[in-house]
Length: 86
Image 1 (cartoon, one colour):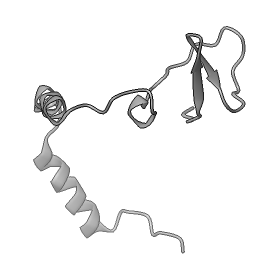
Image 2: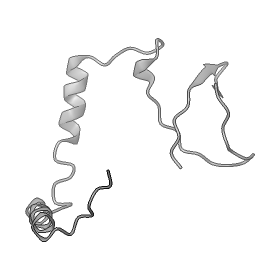
Image 3: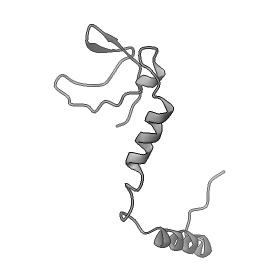
């Protein structure tokens, strides 16, 4: 289940600002968007470029783009895609 909520960081603890459906002992995965809060600094242009360079090519070898294109065009021609409901 993916849910986005707002929380406030107070005395070293994240306090949800809306109800959450967890039980005591549940383990959850947290993702942070601290750049949008007033408490953190936006990365510099150089830091952003360095981060992008570090990840460049990370997907290389994990998929075949030509096969993907063939499948997409094949599905378009065959009409195998479901008809959208209006």
